[in-house]
Image (cartoon, rainbow, N blue to C red; front, side):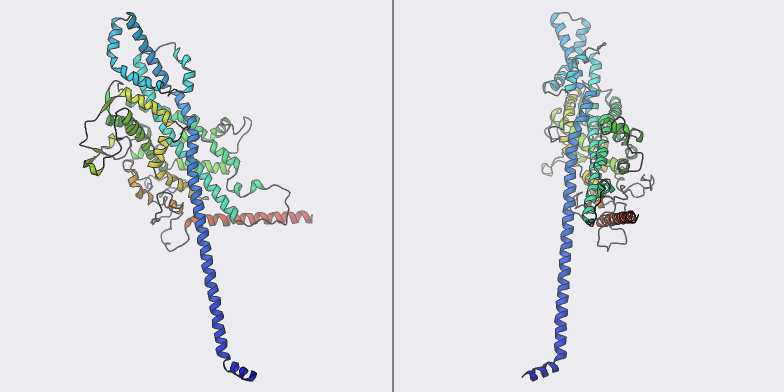
Length: 596
């Protein structure tokens, strides 16, 4: 029996060997395939978790930006309200009116006073509308405290002078607050997204770095030389960097107010407060002020520099740190030396001087001025039931015609109803009362939500896209992508940026797709579609952006690894190499000390 079995195995040993080999090879192949599938699942899961983590960090960062603006806004609003005491002028007008009425009742009024009173009787209703500023409680605390001293002026002003000052100050105050709010919103987005990017990069590098050798004990503290410090993500640098918003809140707004006041005096100066004007006329006047402040043409708007309102010059940086309490009077900072803080300030300056900053600032101003003129003034002053910027629906069967560019307060092409009812009018004094009250609403940061901040964030989706570009830009070559720009970061006049060539008259939210197809916006798609939905990244022709996160260069469409991951991978590899070199140097120093 045993011999027969041996003979059978001997006769079929080749077949048995082949069968065992096939089974073994199949088993190994199956295990290999399963391992690859498992690795692919783990990689996809880790990538999904990383993207969700990045999205969550970015969204939280934008929420922090909104709350930061609300926290800083009252400081600027308090300074502006104190510099332009509209309520004090209103009180003086009311006192002069009371004095004339007292003289009239006592029979002591002269003929000239009677004629003057008759000529100005048309403004009494407007005076009552302005008195609502006090009845509704819109009086600043600093103005109440200084009311007694403010009234004891050596030379009393006439009613005409008071009305003119009231007109100029009311408009200047609200317009300055709008510009300050827009600039503060953009500055805060830039600052917090730059720091958020560094914080995220630091966390990614720390997770990917190998654990330190626990067998050696270092008696020296090297925490300041860690990963966070290498990427400028240390507490002191962040604190000093965020402190520079002090300049806009305490100095920049004053320069801006002077520029706005000059434009308001030139445009609204000849307008009598007793004149009845239409809302379209009010929009034309407001637009004229905006053109003088921001620029009348696209080239003028692009050449307008906002940096001096937002950040101090280099020789005043220590002054800002000392005034804000970060540095004592005897301390000096190291801003003149190359450092992470210097890099942050330079990068912020480049972003502020970029054409994209001006474009988005214009869109923010569009929403804020539209909320003030087309919404608040339309409802409260012109008694309109529907805001002027809302167009009638198609079901109403009303024809729409394009509105003239010069009559739009928002610097954009809107529509109006040619068959609507006669346009209502309102006295300029009544409009001034509404605008004066809205100054407190614009500067409201203690009782959110702020209607104007909400209008900006909901109406300007490009703001989130701009923040995404800043958040996801390359750490090592952190400059906003401007096709055709020179190496110093300035745009070449002969080759304008594709993100900035859209004329402001067409820079509405409907034109956003053309703006999103630019190389710079391609970065937002890699941050989970944070700009506007989960859309595919458009192909970029002929030129690769510096911030090429998510955008494949031309001729490399078959690559599967996104540029966003390449950036982080490069950062991790370089940081690991630096750490290995530092560890080798420390080991060599320890060996030299032991041998000596």
